[in-house]
Amino acid sequence: MADQLSKGEEFEKKAEKKLSGWGLFGSKYEDAADLFDKAANCFKLAKSWDKAGATYLKLASCHLKLESKHEAAQAHVDAAHCYKKTNINESVSCLDRAVNLFCDIGRLSMAARYLKEIAELYEGEQNIEQALVYYEKSADFFQNEEVTTSANQCKQKVAQFAAQLEQYQKSIDIYEEIARQSLNNNLLKYGVKGHLLNAGICQLCKEDVVAITNALERYQELDPTFSGTREYRLLADIAAAIDEEDVAKFTDVVKEFDSMTPLDSWKTTLLLRVKEKLKAKELEEDDLT
Amino acid sequence: MRDPNLELQESGWEELRKEARKIEGDLDVKLSSYAKLGARFTQGGSGSGYVDSGSPPIGSSRSWKSMEMEIQSLLEKLLDINDSMSRCAASAGPATSVTQKLARHRDILHEFTQEFRRIKGNINSMREHAELLSSVRDDITDFKTSGSMSPRMQLLRERAAIHGSISHIDDVISQAQATRAVLGSQRTLFTDVQGKVKVLGDKFPMIRSLLGSIRRRRSRDTLILSAVIAACTLFLIIYWLSK
Image (cartoon, rainbow over all chains, first blue to last red; front, side, top):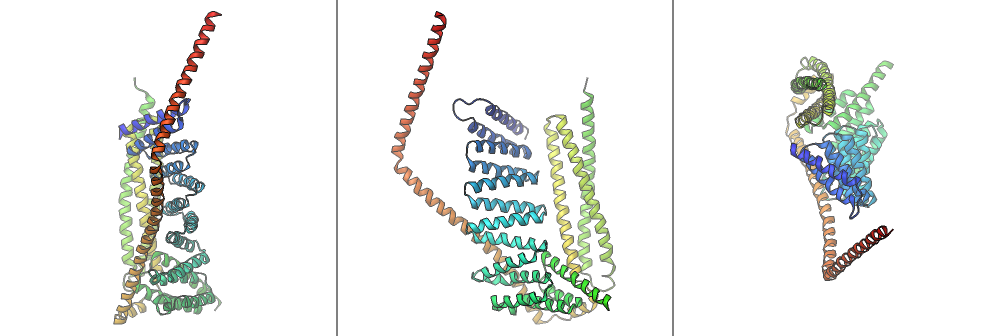
């Protein structure tokens, strides 16, 4: 550890000296890049993540001066991986620069992959707005490169976060689109009722009974087997409870469904919102009476 | 004579480190209590009987909230102390053991933060779940639920389990499809590389002779340049001597 740290600092000093010197034969940037790479490696072995990240950024500057954008982008990615352990904001900015460089040289697949990585970092930090933005960008890039599976994964994340941020229409559109695509795939069509259930729950959050009824009819047309499932029964019964403004019926329906299939935290959160609105409406009715 | 400033910094560092270790111990104890509280909240939420389910959620909710705020303030205090230790270490000059200890304290803080966030998320999920399913007619619902262990219910439960398996299979299929797409593009890339390498191999003798020519030309250029420099230097020396 100690000797690795001192060795890294020694390499860094050599590289800085070479940069400040006047290169007569050969390129000083190439030599400095080699030395910076060695220094960063030593810092990583010494677990000095901040120093390693800073050194990788210097390496990226050298590669940019050499007009090697791919190597510069890769250096930014390495810097981001080092900063991930100590400084999330710095890590995100490094990945952002790497994405810009990959876009410049036309490597959209790698740009999409690192956009997804940025989104995952924000998700870990529980910054849902930024995670949503970057997942959306990532899905667009994957779609441009015709990598449909990864694009759909990112889109599902977008839909999940959009619903948490109360952008229900966007969430509904995404889930319905994914359900439509899954119907054409023999392997994935058995999971369609899950997507339609998610879309239906988002419809319930919009508190529009007519829209819910129309949506349920549309889902039956999409997937004829959906009308026989318990997911459809749950959505229809909840719609009826909302129409009648009956909180007790709502609770009974959800409890019965939950006794069979435990609801995950996302569905629980959204259904709780529906219930709170229903309670508020019922209280208004009582006050009027 | 020793530097009084250095002694002051050393004592400050030791005091900060002692305080950091004390807070870390407190955090460890409180996180364990927090996790146990979460488990008890789960049991309380799913408890049977109208009377028993009345008071525990409210009481545990209140203590849960106060404990959460307590842990939050301890984490912020520990973060401040780590920053102070960073400044002490920076001003005290490079010392490897100090850097290692500082990195270890930072790792501990990160680990505690992650654990606190995870437990908090779990407790929030459980609380929302309990709130969603609770009602003023819990007793009637309990009665209804207890009397419904019929074959139809068991079949429905079985079908729900099958649906869960289908969801997991969907995830695996998505990963497999993504991997297949990546491998396909990789194969295309390798095919291109193979073609290029074959073309390169065909032209390898030409390239070798080309490289030889380049090397000879470079060597010749170097010799010419050296000769010209030497001649000019010699001429300058002669001119200077004859002036």
